[in-house]
Image (cartoon, rainbow, N blue to C red; front, side, top):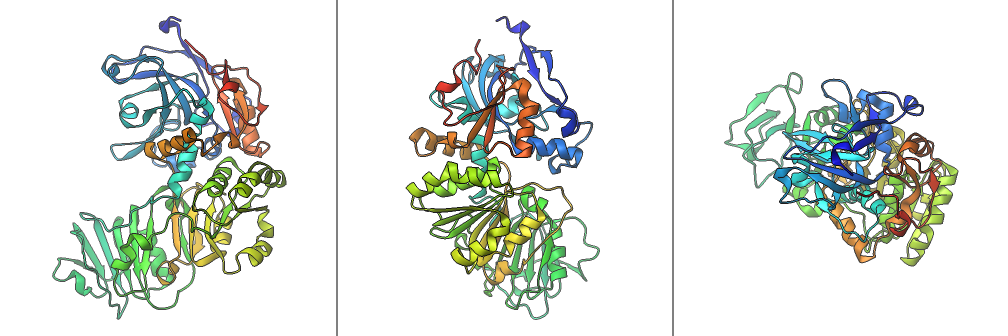
Amino acid sequence: MDRTMRTNRHWPHRGGTFEAMMTAEPETLAVSEPGDEEVIARVEAVSICSSDIKIMRMGPEHPLFAGAKGAIDTVLGHEACLRVVTVGAAQAGRFHPGQRLGLQPAMVIDGARSIIGMDRPGAFAQYLRLGPEALSGHVFDVPETVSAAAIALLEPYGCVEKSWRPNVRGQLLPGGRALVVSAPGADFSLADVPEWREITVVGDVPDFLRPRAVTRADGLDGLSGRFDDILALGDLGAAHLERLAGLLATGGVLLQGRTGPSPGPVSIDPARLHYDGLSFLGTSSRDLDAALSPDAQRFDVRPGGVALVHGAGGAMGRIHVHRLLQLPEGPRTVIATSRKGQRIDDILRDFKAIADANGRRLIAAGAEDLAGILKEHAPAGVDDAMIVAPSAAAIAQATGLLAPDGLLSLFAGFPYGQGVAVDLAAVALTGMRFTGSTGCSVEDMRNVLSRVEAGTLDLSANIAAVAGLDTLPKALMAVSEGTVSGKIVVYPQVPDLPLTPVAGWSAEDEHGLTGGG
């Protein structure tokens, strides 16, 4: 095929509503030659993410669009398997036609997010243009022996892996901006004080800061900007803790040292926990370094414990369940909740055999049944709770179900500005953990791929349906309404492929669907 005649059928997203998408039509444009630093790739397969639907429903209110300039004009779709078609002259040493690639879409350019399938045109299209930023560190070679559908699922599975890995900062930041707030009588030590570029102190100056140059402030009112590190020393009240959490910069650390009782619930913004990488550390020891020890910062599930996946009926929740059941040092019991009855049945149908084979107990139920289940299986609370449902009520419920040293991880996006009540002081007093995660790295995706190639992870367990590009609205609706449990994989090169339920999908099943030429 003459590449000057190549056309790209795609679904544009210009900020319209989800409902408008249901009656829209795809567009077709000519594909121009790649620039010297570019590559044109064919989209062999792309899977639908619930984020694609969330973006259409929330529009410019979506947290990842916050601060964006200009009108929305993009192509969604970020979970993709690609095949190189044409290569710009400057990229010829690294890429060649026919090369198969995986894609990690969440780029950061000049300190700002620039996501393929959101900020930049994505893979709900037949072809994708990749620039030097993506080619320098966001694509990687993938084998021919793995299905295009499985390659597309490396990104969501990689995101799940990252959510159970150290994904926020666990140390104080040299060169950062620090705020130290001391309650009367607070007495804490810190052996290795960073060379902060700026230190603001409210209350008494701790001994470990002498003779550092500090700026004194009478209170939290009037403080400007956000802080990379905040040290909350002594038995500060709930209002102070809430305000300090709000003063954290993106990627910031709130380190508590306290010995007294908890002051009660504190409202935190779940979007900041999910998107902004906030880190909450604490200790009841006089030595603050105890909170900075890796041993005090658990991210993965407790081996042999009880884990809750709250909102497990959707595709990402199912991936969490799948991971926990096949994890070598996983929990003894996995409780999976969903608010749709059929999805509960589907979880048991698809994963009960995996649980039995690995000596695990899988319980799938509605959230309304949790109290009775926990009374029997986790009377002291769950060790780990992964929140996949984008619901503040779900977070509040799960927080109340945690064991005193339990881990709550947020894996659901919210608009900025909401609040959810958590016992933030418990981080210091009992070792409770609150984390959140979004996106993944190429390394996360490669780790998933290595397990697929080794035969220890079968991604087809979560491939529930396939569709062609022109069937995208129907496929999106199926995901939105929960009528399909698991992932829907779209094959853009066969636009008229109907939405078709599948089971045990493999590379052989893809024959004729991924395109050629």
